[in-house]
Image (cartoon, rainbow, N blue to C red):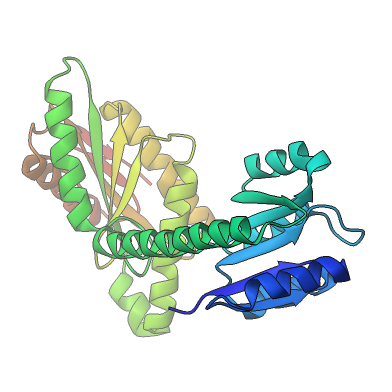
Amino acid sequence: MEVNILVVEDNNESAKKLDQILKPLDYKYWIIEPQDLEKMLKTIQFSVVLTELRMPYINGEQVTKNVLQSSSTTNVVIMTGYSFINSAVKIMEAGAYNYVTKPFNPLEIRLILKRAVERHFMLLKEGTKNYYMDLSVKDGLTGLYNRRFLDAQLSKKVADFKKIRYKNFSVVMIDVDNFKQYNDRYGHVSGDKLLRDLAALFQDTLRMREMDSVFRYGGEEFCIILNDADKKEAVMVSERIRILVTLYLTETISLGVATFPIDGDNPKDLIGKADQALYIAKREGKNRVVSTLGSVNE
């Protein structure tokens, strides 16, 4: 795998010494003036950035921030004199990987570079692993968790809540009203955008309730798990979501609510009861919330 090293140095003598140290290594490297940093970060993925601590155009702390904003897998190494080691350590607390001192010790620099490069590829591998993990539990269109993850989370929540008496949580099934007609009229691109907009609205609405989770159940159906919510609270939250959809989007939604344990003490029964309530909401005219205790009218 290709290793790219960037050196940010405004001192010619230091730049020459670093060139001599890096030349024998099997790395591609660039030695640049600080004002060229932004352009380089936009064009090349670097494993390591070596930067001078004190420069007139930009200091090492700002270089570190810029690099980490550009790439979370790039490691920053600060170059400094002995009298400024404390400053370098503070920048490490802000995200830099390590520091080297002047006058340069070639063996020290090569060892730190070797470890920084290894860390870069380890972070890349970890990121790829997380990416594929996301693919297995997240819906590609909306970015919400998918039905597979819902099944796992619901099973875990039921098991956990069975151990705690007098605890409730609720399941809300949501369906977009007249979605097929919307797709037929405006096309699938617009339909996909509507689903993404709904997903974002659901997440924003539930942001204050940090333990709640939103899932794409499939097609135009969504599911929400409302943690520590009894029937009354679940209906109130659902009605708030319904109203916000009518205010901010062109289409409407219908919602069905079921609550653990009164509507079921296992995932299949809870989803089934919420689905039944959703079916009633659609049958009664859509754009409404229905729980197993009755309907909240439009």
